[in-house]
Length: 69
Image (cartoon, rainbow, N blue to C red; front, side, top):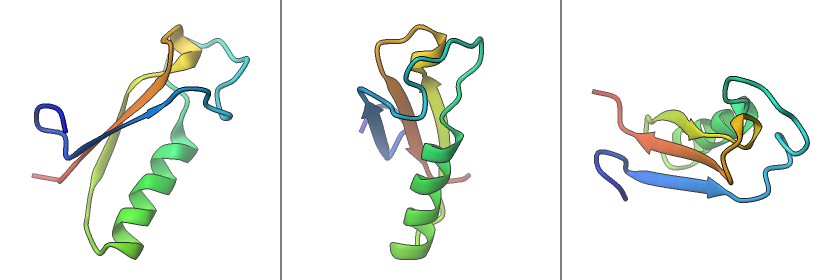
């Protein structure tokens, strides 16, 4: 946990982003999987936001998971 995040997920060698270069984060599939798992398997509504992404030059992809206000 960091700050308001319930969970911070770091993906070191993201298969979704590997080899790509873009100006905006690209891990939509990972965010969807995390959101669906939380809602369907745990019964918890969450919001995910990618705060770092390999495609933009970060060393790893980072997804913060929070509860909606």
